[in-house]
Length: 255
Image (cartoon, rainbow, N blue to C red; front, side, top):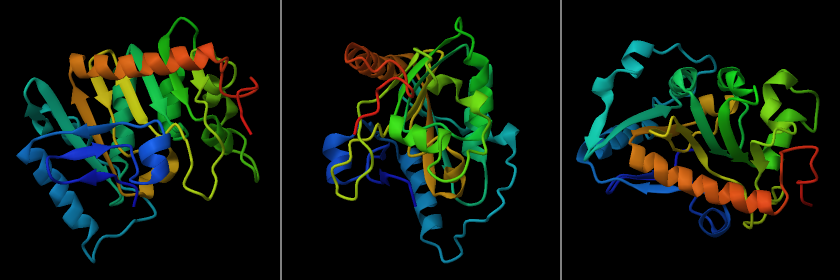
């Protein structure tokens, strides 16, 4: 169970309701007033609390035509919002993110980590230095997937190009996980695409989250994208000014 939402006015985001989640971590919350959106979240909640709710080990392939249909979008003023949920044995969130990246010319990322092989493959087109991408990630969570403490990563190292001295991606000034409630992760799970689409929610961009109960939104709005981009710009400027120029092999890992 990894979703973070309250059904009242339609509240979702990446924040946990803990001391660390509320006061220390970099995260985002959305408050969205929409009966239709609240109904979708209520339906998901009822699925989660059903005795028949399971987490199948082998996800089913989703119908991409249906997933990406404009008819799924909910209009809230000038913003088109499409909710997605995982945990019932599908890869629908991963497939939607990959489809958006495949069409993108510009991608910005604020995330705890990126380790899903499909998403990594899609992002690889942004590896050339002339491609328009940048972001901030949590160095400790990325290190766990790039250089696991036990064994070797099953993901080709070339797919982690953004974490190896690529100055377009920086390390959040966080600390390693501790068992107390004072963790200060980069806890966002956000992509900003082509200055008009924002992808927020509880979904870490990792393979493990396919079996979790997750929620994600596709927000189509240039003003909303500008607000998220402004938040990212603040992160990037403050982190680069502090000297955290890349994720690994840069001295940016704090003890």
